[in-house]
Image (cartoon, rainbow, N blue to C red; front, top):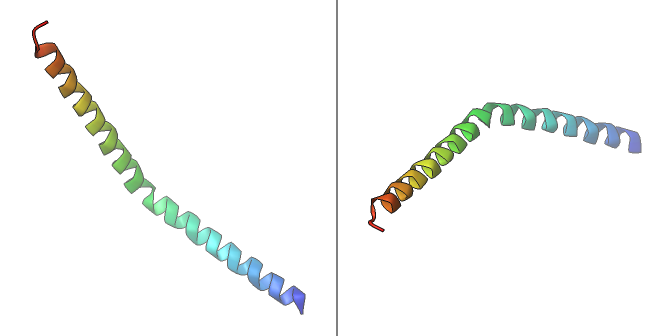
Length: 58
């Protein structure tokens, strides 16, 4: 009786694991694009702050 339950749970775990992996592969591009936008925004903000600092007289 315990063996069928173990096989059932292992089978469900296998299917869920593969589904999770395929989902991550599909969404990886979106995560990478969001990270690149974030890095670009940080660089733009730093460049603007740097140019504002250099524009002030000392």
